[in-house]
Image (cartoon, rainbow, N blue to C red):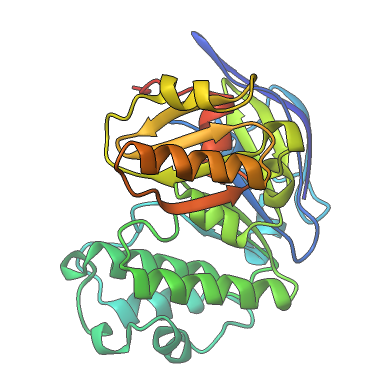
Length: 303
């Protein structure tokens, strides 16, 4: 999939403003962004449900808005919220979708893989949120797609179901299936994605492999530790060499920014001992993807 310079305008807002994306065969691209950032509109354009005002979109080598009938059997779409009829039973729904494919997977096998066999006679409206999501994923995959679009695929799932879906997506990648994933779960994106695009204000504000986005230079490395809340971070800053920054990033979660060496670690733990507190969960290394996300999109609540 190749997207170059796409723009989508509405009367009062430009939802997508010159976005570029590339998804190679067998790759997994995670598109992240706050609510209203433009990621859903971008994905709808790639799926062929919306036409860009400018730019080029090629999905499996075709223009999705002009070649929808040709593309539809080759892609799978998993919308957030299920998309099934409330009264339809699980197995009936999956068999219906499979009947529209030229060479579908065995619906019963797929139900078993996704842990839905015992619920196969249950109506969609009586499923849990996680079960509805798994059925929606099954419907997206039963036609053996070459590319799948997944919107919040593990929303509402318990940890066991989430891990099962992650393993399935990894298996799809090994089979050469391309995946475009939107998610608010940073751990999910960091675990699964080959490439991450963070979208805000209709633009890509950061892009790259998770390891690249979270990598830090020696000058911007971090030491993180947990202790009781309310420690005087100014006193710890005074104990460290000039240029280090100390903050209580969340209640009881402290962050020291600057080049981290054995002397810095010793200073932090000695200072904590002087305050009569135990420094726990000491971690030296890179940021996580959530920190990068907040850094490039801001921390204010979006409506």
